Length: 410
Image (cartoon, rainbow, N blue to C red; front, side, top):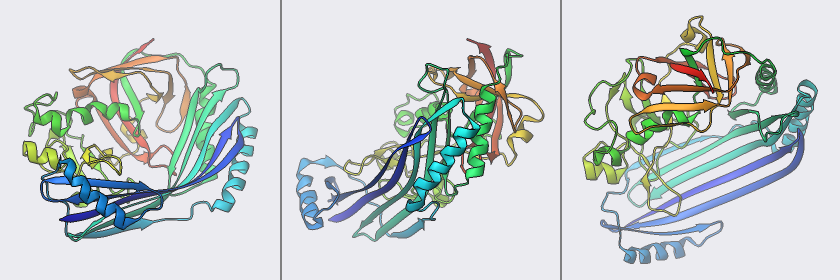
C-alpha cells in the first residue's frame, strides 16, 4: 500500500481599506492536511484542518478504501524537488505604516476617487510526499494589492481598479500606475473609428483564454465534443501563437507540481505550438482513458480525489514590447470587460465597461462603453498581434495581449 501526505499552508497578513483609509488589519495562518491511501485499484482519503494526529489520519485513510473510490493509476513516485523563495518584501511590523503612507499620497494625488479593498502579504507552501520516493515541496511569498476605485460622483460600487501582485513592492511604481489609470479616466474621448482595429487585453484576463481552456480539455477531446475535434496535429492559429499550461515557479510564481504530484518537463506544457494544436491537457485519469499525453493537470481541494484542472495559462511572449507590437497604431485597451462569452462555434463578444485609448505607453483617455467581437480562430490566428514582453507595471507579471477585433458602440 502507498500512503501519501498532501498539505497546504497559507499565512496571510491583510490590510483592509475603505474610502482610502485603513479599516482593519487581519492575520491568518491556515494549514490543511490530507492523507491518501492507494491499494492499486482504489483511493482512500482522510483530512484535517489545523492541528492533527497523523497516525489517526493514516488509519482513517486506510479505512476509507472501503468506500471503493476507483483510482487504478500509479501514484507519482521517485522524485525529490524543492522550491522556496520567501523575500521579505514588506515586514509585518512595517505593513501598516507603509499602507498609511501610500494611502496618504493617494488621497493627495487622486482626491476625486475613493479607494477600497486592500493589500496583503501572502506566504503559501504546498508539499506532497509518499512512501514510493516522492517528495515535492513549494514555498513562496508575494504581495497582492487590489484597489477598487470609485469616482466620488458615481453611484457605482466600482468604476475602475488597479491591481498588482509580485515579489517586489515599489510605492513609486504603484502610484505611477494609479495615476495613469485615474488621470485617463477623467479624459472622455469619442470612438474615432468603428470596425476592425487593434484591441489590447490584460494577460490575466481569463475571459480571452476561456474557450481555449474549455475546448482543449482532455475529457472534451476524448469524448469528441470539443470545438477542436479532429484537429489534433493540425494548424488552426497564427505561427506566432503558442498557448501553454505553465507552472514555472520562477515566472508564474505558483506551485510547480499538480495535485497528483506530477511535474511537467521545464514546468510547462505547450498545448498549441506555433499555431498547431498539439495536445489536450489531461490528468492521469483522462490520459489513461483516452490515450492522451499526461500533462500534470490535476487539481482539486486538499480533501478531494484529484481531478482534471487547467492550472495556469500563458501565451508565449513575442519578445517585443506592446508599443513595438502596435507599430505606431493606436489601440483600444480593454480595462474592464464583463458579461462576454464565446458561442459553441467560437464566436466571441463582450461589452466593455471601461476602455482606454492606448498608444503602447500611455492611457490617452476613456472611451464610451463599447462592444468588441471576433472569432477564436481570428483572435489567435489572422488577427493575433502578439503577447508583449513588457509588463503593465514593473512590479507585476501581468502583460498585454493584442489582436485585431471588430469594435462598435453599445
